[in-house]
Image 1 (cartoon, rainbow, N blue to C red):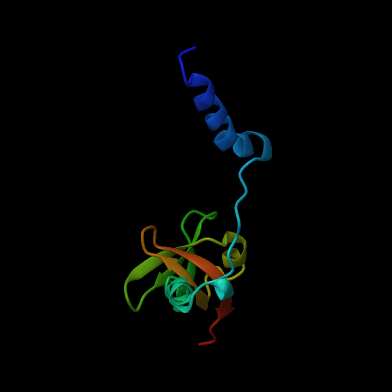
Image 2: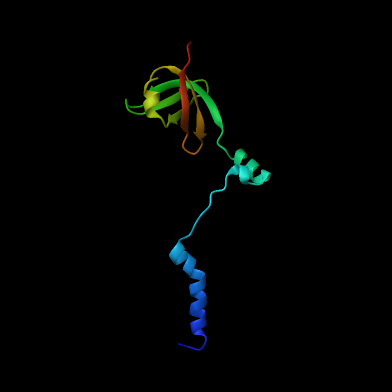
Length: 114
């Protein structure tokens, strides 16, 4: 050992011991505990719930989509079990659209009577 290396090891032990023996603890901060500007930014970044109208169609008997004839677009639906119940029907879908995948995270599907 070189002169002073013992004190370096002791110092390193003092700083590392809490992580080695006690683990690292993380704390969750609730939005209500954050300053107003931070809480406001979190609210602004919340996904926007939107409604979509169209007809639930089957692509291959297993995969169901929402076809919006009025706007000539179609969307994937993440809740296939719920979509299956409305196959061939005009519906109103409430959910959050993921613009990257055109997938609607379905909150609710209701039939629209013509």
